[in-house]
Length: 446
Image 1 (cartoon, rainbow, N blue to C red):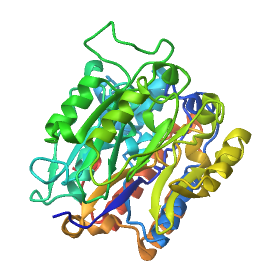
Image 2: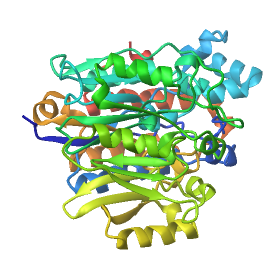
Image 3: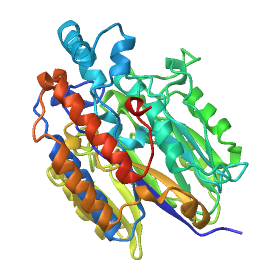
Image 4: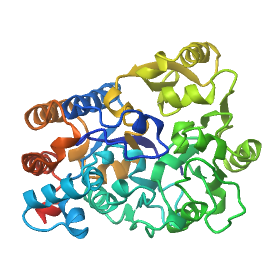
């Protein structure tokens, strides 16, 4: 029997050290805004406003907390010693790049937090979580420990939820989480098809690979996650990302494709073997026909897709079809804005488009889809999870007040060495874990 289920979106709450350090080679937006002055307060409020709009429409909207940054355990592991203020001063003098990496608020992009397989797909009928090792980027590779703690605190009941450690943090098993993973299904509680998209085959040097930018996800990592989650072949499709798209700045598949239900919205350059990928999905998808919404290069050049983050949008069910929640930049790029108007009139599965202001995130290379982790939960699983992270009107007001009290209006690279910033962050996060009821998840709390 197919159980009733919903798709909950867990957005990353933007952290107090949100800044523009340009740490992500291959992410065009991140590099183009390097060393600009950021506004952590504005970024966090923009993220909360996006969550509130979706919660008000009836979507289950959860929150994942930011990480402690600057991360002193990382700096100490790299040889900086003494009191906290001394560690920060040494790092700032010896290697500002290392300090910037240890201060990144990149955990806000929870599409990279983990890969999640719903109970309808798994062999033991539990929801499975594997935090992404994010080994391609140093500043993100230090996230998975606290991410795992957060997920275990929220999804604690082992009769419903299974948690795995991150894969080995080496390039051969580079794993970027749900940013390279999409689930297609007839309904959230029905068995689905989990589409794992990889950029390279690590143990085959002859396989196609990008030439300009690195591929961050390997086939070997995707296969390992599928094995861990107990996914049968009938629930899985492995697809290679087009190397030319990676070299055009498409560092994750969610920058060029997004799926929901039985609909896959994608650019023609998304997959190396497009027709085979579609055929494999159709063969495995049960209870519904695949709706493949293909965007051609003539309609939207790949450069415009990357600049606007058209595909890094949320695709959501409504009573009247699907809603595409896009960043405001989509209306600033002529070809994309024109395409969106035509899309709504086309009579296809996507029937409405709404614009969301996430400029602070976009300047660092993350749109609406980067900011959320999707977790399909049946009614029992939804009751079993920790409800303190589900956004309500009351929680929204508390978090807005919390941000206003603890976040700086502006933050530059030189501010990262300020010992007062570290104290502000720890005070804020200590209060936040109390608001969300998560217990001790940060290193400074343990």
